[in-house]
Amino acid sequence: MWVDDWAPSAACRQAEPDQLFVRGAEQNQAKKMCGACPVRTECLAEALENRIEWGVWGGMTERERRALLRRHPNTSWRVMLEAARGEQPLAPLSEAV
Image (cartoon, one colour):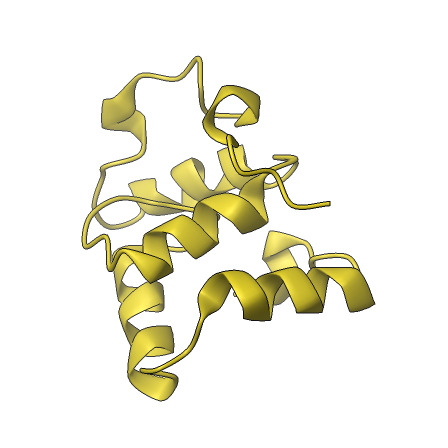
């Protein structure tokens, strides 16, 4: 089931925002926070749909999201991710990156 008001359920809601807007190796720590997040898919869709340029969103860094957007420039991310999630659970971050 898709959660439209996903932010209150996010695993990072109690974190300091600066923890999600980091560079380099620190991004791996930020991505770990997303690992068990129940709304990771919704968060990622939000970042992709709105072309959010900074921070870790839905377990992906800016660079990872940019690469995905280049490969699929005209995609409805909510529709695609919602359909993919219905077919199978979202892969753990260790497998997805």
